[in-house]
Image 1: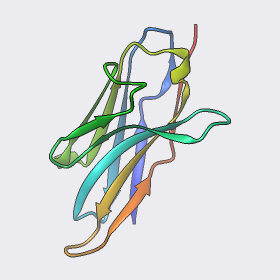
Image 2 (image 1 turned 180 degrees about the vertical axis):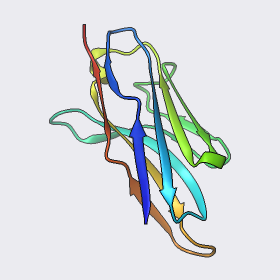
Image 3 (image 1 turned 90 degrees about the vertical axis):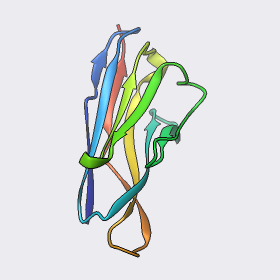
Image 4 (image 1 turned 60 degrees about the vertical axis):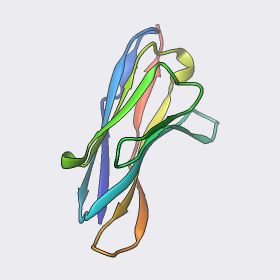
Length: 121
C-alpha cells in the first residue's frame, strides 16, 4: 500500500505563514503529480496547487502569489509554503499523489488524512 502523511498545520494569525509537508511511503516505483487540496467546513474539497514530477506547478486563483508548492522526489515529499494567510484559508488541507507502485503498473490516486490549518487572531 501507499501512505501519505501530512504535517505542519496549526493555528496562525492573519498575515502569518505555515509550511505544510506530506511524505509518501510504502510500495512506490514512481510518483507522478502531487497536489494539495483543502476543505473548509460545509464546503467541497477544492484544489490548492499541483506539481508534476518535473516541477511544473499550477495554483488556484485564490492562493496565487501567496503559496508555493514544491517537492523532493528523492524523499517522495511535497511541500506547501503558505504566506499572507487569511481567515478564509482556514480548512483541512489534504495532499494527494498519483502513484505507480510497480514498473509498468497502473497509476492510482492516494490521499492523506489531512492537517488542520486555522487562521485566526
